[in-house]
Structure formats: structure tokens, C-alpha cells
Amino acid sequence: MEPIDGIMIDKRVESVFAEVLAEFRDWKVKYSKHLLRPLSIGKRVPSIPTSSDSSNIDGDSDTEQRLVQQVTVTSYSEDGTPASTSTISLQVIRAEVLEPHEPYESCAPISRNVFKGDDDDRMAFIPFADDATFDHVDHTLCYSSLAWQEDYDPDLEVISLEAAYRLHTVHHLPYEDIDSTGVLPFKLFSSPRKPGLFTLSRRRDLLIWKGTTIPHSYEFPSSFPSPNNLRRRLERINALFCPSLNCIEPLCTVHVEFNPMPPPRKPTIRLSELLNRVERPCEAGCFLQIGAVDLPPQWSEDDISSLKTILDIEPDMVPCDHAELCLKPCHEVLYYRKLLYPDPDELQIEYPNEEIKGKPSSLEFRDLETSFCANSQIQQGHFKELEVKKSKWGLGVFLLEPAKLGDLIVEYVGELIYEETFDSRGEVAGHRGRSYVFGLNEALSLDSSYMGNPSRFVDHVGTSSASGETQCNCRALVRLVNGEHRIGIFAVKNMEAGTEVLIDYGSAFFTR
Ligand SMILES: C[S@@+](CC[C@H](N)C(=O)[O-])C[C@H]1O[C@@H](n2cnc3c(N)ncnc32)[C@H](O)[C@@H]1O
Ligand SMILES: [Zn+2]
Ligand SMILES: [Zn+2]
Image 1: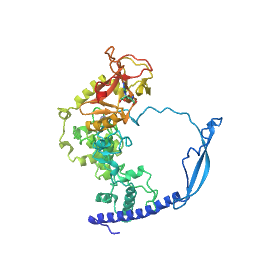
Image 2: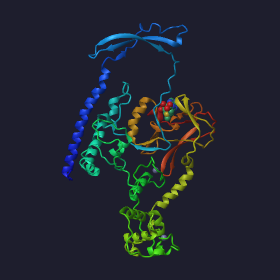
Image 3: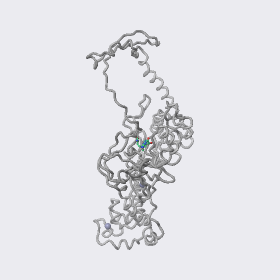
Image 4: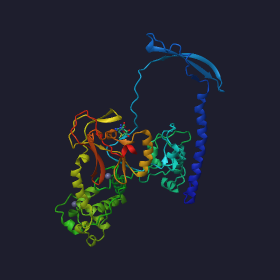
């Protein structure tokens, strides 16, 4: 097939997509009919027994545990009219009546707060849909649209993959070109934080349909950077780490900003000075042994780009050390280093002291140290052994070991949410009669309705009307830990194992 470009590529992607779409629809109609047919012919449908059917269900003899119940079964003919009836016997086993569990909602376990911000503006489902006492209409006003009304068809994934495969193998179009037309309903390659169709297809069991020409063992190109591309690999790994200097954890759930690569650093030591530091050859290929070479060493573009990436990050290393990182002889590294920085001794050198002046990084680290001491209990995460079980008010938290005054019992963790989501979730929580939200600071609340740890079950106790004193044994305190507000539940008295952990929610809680 002839190479094509521009508008022609768009047209070809459109026509192949339309061709696959038509084939798929044709197949789907036939396949659905094929699946439904056995369900409609001559199948037997048991009818719900009436009291006259179950003459021996109330038996009071020794057959109590093994009752037999008669059930009428009706067969239907192809046109839907009943054809025949028969009676079968079913054995009934009487089970002990179980008490219902205390009401609860599903909650994902987490060990650290998760930044959520606001819930999706598309309403995922209608809460309490069968409960007339909940104002559904008012609640939908919290959202801008209904998620299930979106035009998303999972079949389009297999159709798009098939179209991409045909365009690539039959029409010889590179996948990148197909993707950049934007004609297919999905992006094929991933972008930061948004997986593309190729990545998604690896995570799913795709529908197998008759028209597909993609071989079972075929692998679509990966969005992962090639192992030879050091810069892209570093960017990817770097992005996993939190950019907050107080945190720097991988896959941090609190500071969700993207972590960019640091800008290239300039050398602070002249090359001649660096070379003077090398006292003995690092290996047979050391620049000290070989000296200047006439022929340029044979390096691939990836090799050169890797050296450039390493120099951008750490320019003040001797070539002997760079050689180890590049897996190349040291004199070759020096050759390319001089090529990348043609006149190294003329480079604009930035001296370290000037660079640091006026930058806040050292201050932030001082903060880190002091807050670490003050809030080390939360930071270190040494919690008491706890048990969640039935309490006076649903479920509660009980100590499995003693605690002393001042001890951290547990950190209250949840989703960090803004005011708007606090309000929309509040309507649901209010109706349900259970709320799990703590005000954290002016902007954020901490909600453990859907994500949390056992602390979400800590119940409230107020002041005694007789003594006027609070009866709680613990207090929730907001602590600034490394620049982040976190809530610790601390003991305000000595407690024995088995004691229920109780805090005072404060006067506003039950009036909301
Ligand atoms: C943070 S949750 C505590 C766990 C809750 N007991 C449960 O079963 O999930 C707060 C909710 O517990 C209930 N609760 C806790 N202490 C209470 C109390 N002293 N009186 C009435 N209800 C209480 C209320 O339903 C409140 O909204
Ligand atoms: Zn972080
Ligand atoms: Zn060397």
C-alpha cells in the first residue's frame, strides 16, 4: 500500500473504523440472538409455592429439620404460552434466625490520608433510591450531570483496537500517526495520569468476537519508555515521588501534584580541576592511561542522551564515576563530555554558596526536624491494638491493651475533602444517621465514610449533667506534622484493656 499523509490519514482511519464498526454490529446482533434462543424454548420455570402447595411445611414432628416442600414447575412453549405443569419436591432446611449486623457502609482500609478534593461532578448513583423520605431531587442539584447518561460503550474499545491493528498491519500506518488523528474514540498511548487504550487492553479481558484479526499472542506497543531511554525512565520514576520536601514518599496520597524533573544543574567545578582530582586510573580504559583519541568512539544516540541526562543531574563527577553509570570506558565518556560542553573551562560556573543564598530549602528542613519531634507519635504510627465491635451506638472501638495518659491511640485517617463535597456527602450522612467527618482546617475536612481505619468507629460521649465534666477518655487533636494537618486520638486518662475509646465530638456535631 502507498504511504499516505495528512488528510488522507484521517480519512483512512475514519473508513477503517467505520468498516470494523459495521462488522462488529453485524456480529453482535447474530451473536445476541444465538445466546438468547435457548432461554426462550421449552425451559421450565418453577412457580413460587402457595400455602396449599406447602401442606407439610409446618410439620411439628421429628421431621422438623428436614421438611419437604412441593413446588409446581411450569413449562412454556416457544410462543410463551404454558405447555405443561409438574410438581417436584424440594427439601427445606430451617436455619436459626440471625440478628442483623449493625448498619455499616463499605469502607476501603487506608493507613494515610488520601487527598480527594471534590467528588466527581457526575452523579454515580442515586443514594437511598427506594426511600421516599430522602429528597432525591434536591440531592441531584449537588451534581452537574448523571454519570450513567454518558455515552460510553465498552464495545468501542475492542472496535478501536481492531481498527488500529488493521490500520497498522494492513495499511502500514504507524500507531503514533493513527493516534494523532484523534479520529478513534480513545487515545492509544498513555499520557501522564491517563492510561491509553493499549495499556487498558493489557489490564482487561477483552471481548472475543468473530471479526477480530488480532492474533491472541499479539502485543500492542507499550507506553513504557524503552530501557535505553534513561531520561524518560527517570521522569517516570521521579513522577512517583512526592514533590513535597517534607514527604518525598513514593506514591504519596496527600500531595497529589505532579513531580517534574529538576532543571539541569550547571557544573560548579572546572573540568581541568576535576581531572586533576583523579590520582590513579580507574580501569584499563581510563583517560589517564589512554589520553586523547583520534577516532570518535562509536556511541549510539541513546548512549549519548544517557550521558547528557546524567550530566544534567550530576555534572561535578569525575569521568571515572560517570563511566560506571554509563557502562562505558572512562576515556570515551570524557570524549563525549567535551563534545557536549565544547569548551568546558569556559562554562559559566555557578558556585554553591551563591546558589543556596535566599532559597528556602534549608528552612524547610529545619521545620521538618522540629515538627518531627513534636508529633513523632503520629509520624511513627505506633497505635494501640484495637477491636471494632458492637457498642451502645452501633459499632465502637475498644482497646485490646492498656493505654496511659498522653498515649496516641490511633490516627484518624480519611479522605481530605473541600467544603462542596463536605456538603453533598453531608446530605447522605445526615439521612443515614452516621457521620464520619472532622473539620481539619479552613479549607479541608477529613471524611472516613468511604476510606479509613478503625478510628472511624470511635463514639462520642459528652459532659455529664451531674458533674458538668466531660466523660470522654480520649481527645482528637489536630497536629501539624511536616506541614500537613493530621488528627491523632490521644488518651486523656489511663485506661485498661477492654475500655471503649470515647471522644467528645464537640457541641456542633449533633446539631448539624
Ligand atoms: C464517627 S461515627 C462512630 C461509629 C458509629 N457508631 C458506627 O457504628 O459506625 C459517628 C456516628 O456514631 C453515632 N454515635 C456515636 N456516638 C454517639 C452518641 N453518643 N450518641 C448517639 N450517636 C452516637 C452517630 O450515628 C454518629 O453519627
Ligand atoms: Zn507527599
Ligand atoms: Zn578513569
